[in-house]
Amino acid sequence: MDPRVDLIRSRIRDVADFPKPGILFRDITPLLSDGVAFRTAIDLLAEQARPLAPEVIVGIESRGFLFGAPLATALGIGFVPVRKPGKLPHATTREEYDLEYGTDAVEMHSDALSHGTRVLVVDDVIATGGTARATCKLVKRLGGEIVGAAFLIELTFLDGGAKLAPIPTIALVRY
Image (cartoon, rainbow, N blue to C red; front, top):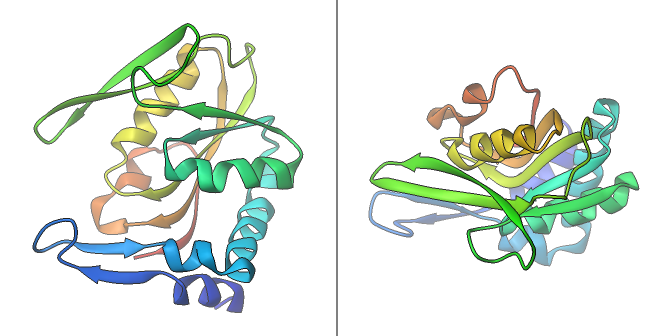
């Protein structure tokens, strides 16, 4: 195994019964507070993303901003935020998606992408894939071309990465 991935994995803390009993939460705050580990994660994401030749990173609120913005800087490309409804100040386009009980939505500025812009979607974790799928649909509606999706962590037992197929998916750590 790559020792850089071992470093990243060692900075992800398991928190039992959070946010509710029976859930094992993967806490990334130790990774964020370790400059070397955080930089290593961004460098590894950049190495894997570079061959996809993205022109812009679309980061999913809120932890996707923590990885998406520095990744965009490392790749020398732009960053576009995807937010929860009502958080962006200009005209937006919205994509709703189903939750276990109800629905949620994500929004992006309607003028954020030019037709054919090569987009890499970024978030910290992919679990069920609902938010990432909605973001990909939103990008496509606005004329973007999804070249891949990148995550620090993939929770493989929830099949979120598989649900994004055929979109290439990058995950540094898989559980």
